[in-house]
Image (cartoon, rainbow, N blue to C red; front, side):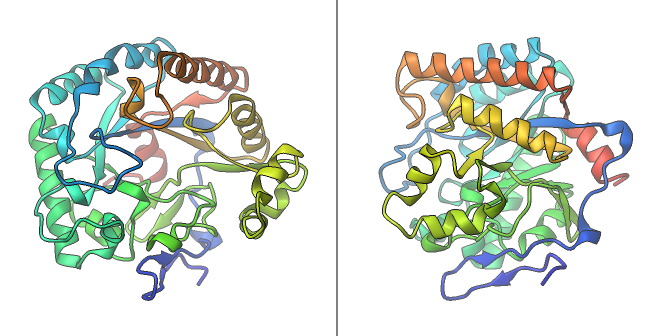
Length: 342
């Protein structure tokens, strides 16, 4: 199973992604250096603590996005907005995004939330929120509808895809290739959603690798602490004990850190960045959700103080990356370095 072929577990609905073989790892050109990217899950507003609803499709927070974008632009950092159906269906949101990507380096990609993306043929459930659990033809129909809407709105076919809730499946790479996608970023290294019917990414590394006809750029997860060599396997075993994960983190033994300001403390993120760079990771993949730019829409930014902390996290992280000589990369630069000609 080292060739990157998925192992579906029909009982749980998701699939277990094996570690990619050495031959499938992306060999970055020397001229690429060590880089980072920031993907923004650009999506509707909904209650994260309540069941999913097909009619929860507000996008008012998009008006708060331009000043946040400007902070990144001032630091020379392009953003890639992974846009879902409610956002691309909002004329005001599209107008805002068009203005933001006019900086010449930022870009629009795709994020598929099946419960708010036509055609609506499935029951809205947690299981069905993982796109890959839907019938193949329904997966294709939803992806075609979203891709065509994005192409019409922005005049260019998107090259990057992320499945909402990381709900990628065995059929996804071929579907993406059919529609001209070059990069997938639906895998969250070191995480497992099998208990909810979703995929298992425990064996997925942070390094980019070829996933059939597309290149996979996982959402970066770094294990820090004195026992970090135990990685995802040890973290999973600690989770079997009451408060095991929290105790290990407080003792400095093992922490699982995703590169996001959402629920990831700044000091842990900075240590994770140092570890990743020190271990030779050539592309660090950061992310956040667009509704976090305005208080009240996500559990991570409830108040004005939360938003200030969110912005400070980014200021400090970008300063550290600059000190370490890690430069931002646009989607076009990543595609050119990892994928080559279409």
